[in-house]
Length: 133
Image (tube, rainbow, N blue to C red):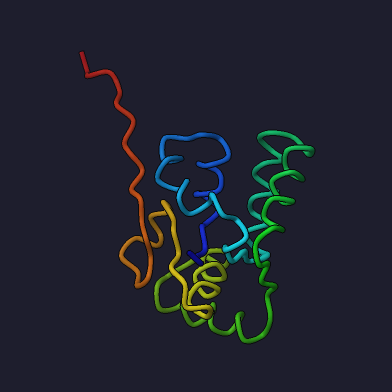
């Protein structure tokens, strides 16, 4: 199924995070995914900081198996409109605009996208802390 999995989904899946199972069905066939080049930037930056350059390059190599979508004028303008309409950051707007332009769902656990059209949103579970004494 063609879709766009947001950076947070990739990170959950690659690190076997608490939402990894939710993202697994969307990421098991990477060849069907749209990959904005801004997602590659975010994933590489996170992976290099947290896991080192070798694992960061491996993560980006995995994204190359999907359809990488570079930023162009049409996408930039649509992203700007969506950023204004939904109060999205630059990177989030590019990712959302890429999904909208290709007419595929965006799959994410980033609460900036919660409630937006054509978004499959997985809420992050709150971490239980010790009750106050």
